Length: 212
Image (tube, rainbow, N blue to C red; front, side, top):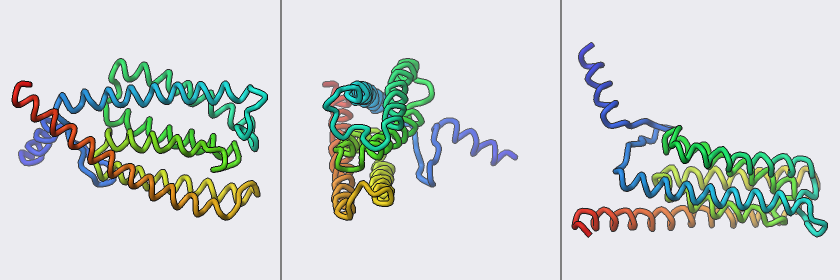
């Protein structure tokens, strides 16, 4: 019908989509360029972290790294580094689009860090601290509601890993308290980073309008 074609045409013009009922719209070109830069910086962090922790696995004084599940740790570290290499190519070509690259890479970051944490004996390894960087980056890359959703997902993943570690017998009950504190900090990080990113975008837009 004509009304259906009209709605479809409007959708193609705005380039909007939805995720979990949250509307995602195309952003201003300058805003998108900033997000591409942040995503490239996050991938650089990913490559350095994955490469460093994989190499540290082969050191004699690697302490807790891979202490519980060495093979899981090694395979995850190698796969995580491979993801960084693949992402460097997709970021160069900008395909898939920005939003879906962001979502896929953030979910991969969460899965990889949780697996590395579990293979290393849980929260005592210190590896969950890497998630603070990822949550901060996600808060710049995503809208505030999606950033908070991601922070909630990260908090649940840390709590779930603590539960599995308890079942396996290499974590204590105090880990739940630590997981709860980390969850609160994840949400605080998401809120503050999102607010700072919004102010930065507004300042950049204002400077552009004034021709600065």
